[in-house]
Length: 447
Image (cartoon, rainbow, N blue to C red; front, side, top):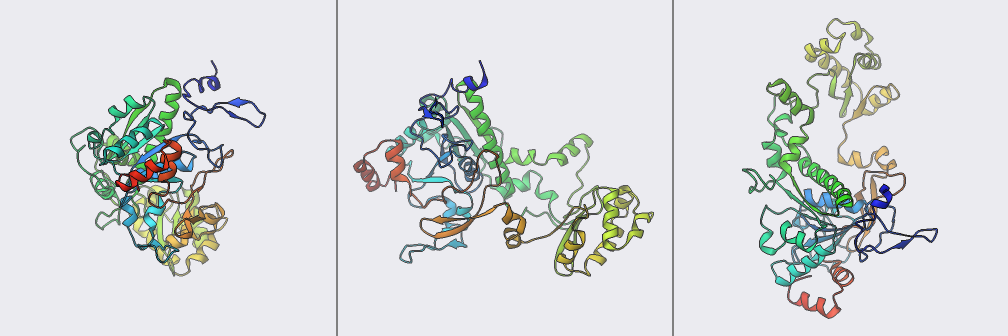
């Protein structure tokens, strides 16, 4: 049996559609006819429905990736407060309607909730749990980031939901995982950065440990989890079964220690500590002060060091016994770094960028965030986009970073207002009548 044929075997309750030549076909991963079509049916996850029970960053980042790739993401939020990050401001994108209560939509929330639909729902109510059970039956994927075991009392744990929907991919994102001595500990990014080695290796050479400027452990966990979900969807094509994904910040942080962890395991030695922007075994490889900022050079081999010397105007450094090879330069790190910075401080960053243009030498200005978002290359790559928010009007967002030759992922819909799609989801997905939805709102079950 060919792969193409096998892909359709487990497409349970899929509705056939017509191709441009009039032939009926079944999408290999799409299982539910009630899943709404997306603008671009060529998106990789078109037809996949995701029940998003996450909040803050790691989980929403994961589900946003799925949404960018075409999945129909239903974001379940507290009916009054919504996602925690709705209150994490300033800054806020202000409401266009001055009479609308509140400061606006927080920039934090807007960062990781595009391409989603908001369902305001309380699962403290029995009716709320019933709705979630019905949605779980109609979804391909569920993502949650509650402490292990805390959803069991609501009947929203994996063992309960797999009986309702055996094909469900159920992904749990936690600080320390479903097992192990720390599994019941809550874990924010900064705690895991500290405990799992990242903070120890981040900061200036003689300074204290510092956290990374963005919550990178949350983000890498979101990336790992989205990757795992897509792999589980492919596995389901072969087996017809869903499965439970156990993802956590601590595991993902250890995994992303990468070559540094490998070095420690192989050598059995203590790590080399903090290096700021420098590299422990390559010189020159760090940022240097300029007249008005900083520039980073990457002299990864002896040839590139020669290019650096020539462009700085000191070709004689290439034959200086202290600097001939990388090993020599590592031994005399302070000498060469001092010489380079004495020169770089004599010109502006822009002047040095012009000097090194076309040299083949890896170099870069050290930009702030506004400088990054207005960078000509960032703009040319379409990494900043403008969307029309239903409450705030035109707002700018960072775009999805991945480009496909046969599809165009992007911001199809702006981050939703709280409960913006409640009526749509209950009506079109679960076939609730208008009077039923009105009653649920009166009872505080949904908003």
